[in-house]
Length: 104
Image (cartoon, rainbow, N blue to C red; front, side):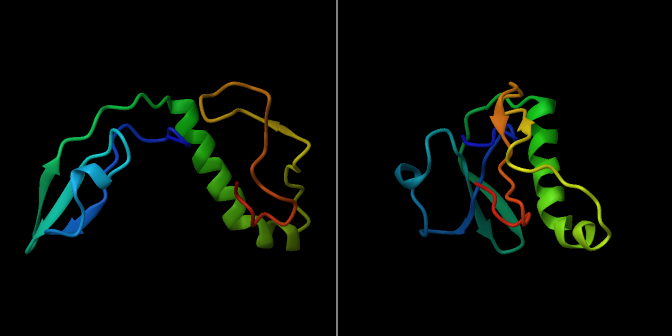
């Protein structure tokens, strides 16, 4: 799991659209049945630290607010600044480009 920001992964599909062997390893599957969702495949629990969750939210927030921050003269991190990686370890380069639009 690239970002490790959630513990469980579930795509939602109509009946017959997705099969268990087509899912990424460890993912579950929810099938829509009228107004309800049915668990068709149970997922595997993935450990996700609070630091990893906050890291992805920070990257999303920075990317989504780059234009207004730039127009106000707010300095944003560049690729040369180090960020925690998805597991919270230091030494990972920021996934946000100077224009704030390019996540890895």
